[in-house]
Length: 92
Image 1: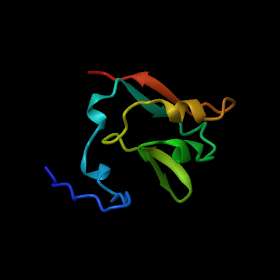
Image 2 (image 1 turned 120 degrees about the horizontal axis):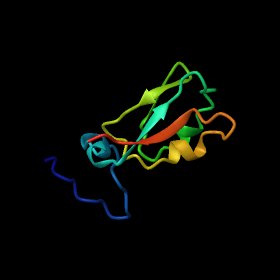
Image 3 (image 1 turned 180 degrees about the horizontal axis):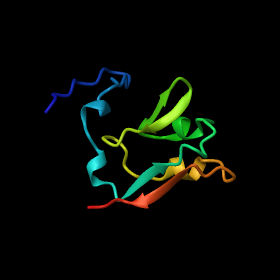
Image 4 (image 1 turned 90 degrees about the horizontal axis):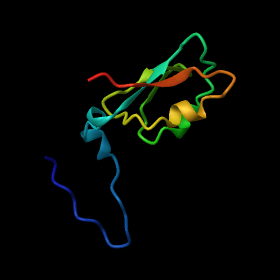
């Protein structure tokens, strides 16, 4: 395991540590993208707390499942008239 650095006085927090840990193995729900419905508004990308939305050339192309915890925020923020993302139960 990676050794943590001591924090500097004043609360200066080092970033970038979350990428070292795969946290998607305990999710119960999985986001699924219907690419034909997606309008590439990227609201899901902005709102995802774990930066799991993969964007290439300004288009949403999928999810990084190593870090996705299945919270469903991407599904919640996908425009109701579009509903390109839906959550399904993760198969064991």
